[in-house]
Amino acid sequence: MRAHAPCVSYVGLRADEETRLGMIFPEEAGIQVRTPMREWGWGINEVWDCLRRHDVTIPDRTDCNGCFWSKLGELYVLWRDDREAFDLGADIEDEVSAARGRPYTFRSPQRDTWPASRRDLGAEFARGRIPTRFLQMMERDKRRETGSCRACTL
Image (cartoon, rainbow, N blue to C red; front, side, top):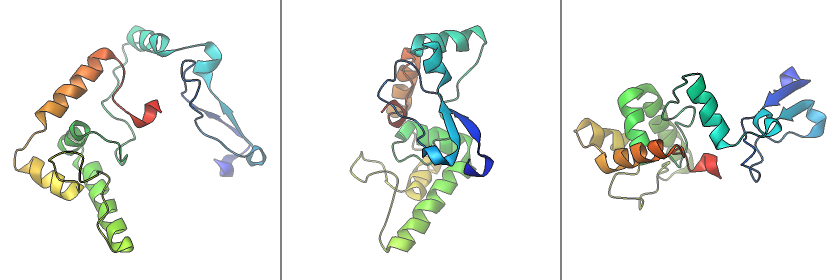
């Protein structure tokens, strides 16, 4: 963005997310940060009303494919629907592991009984193991319209 300064960065923070900061740039960078939904006083209900009014369907995930807080169900859907993005995460794990000289994964090994590494996780999915309980939790969260991303709600 600095290469395009002066410019405006529009950040999708809602009025009911008072504690979230969003993007922060030094004043001298020439980047103005605006949060239109806050300016309009929109909270989650207004956002959902607007999306329904315009018949917009939100995908399960957007640009969070490498997030270390991805849930197992989200990783399965990513593996099932966008193998290239899933494999990119596995490649990143391999590169960082090689650079650090020890295994590195986005998932913690102690999270659950599933493998921590994307490569091993993908192999489990390919063998037909499906994280049914985690997919059901995703569907439940979707019906509540709370969203499923823990990091984005911080």
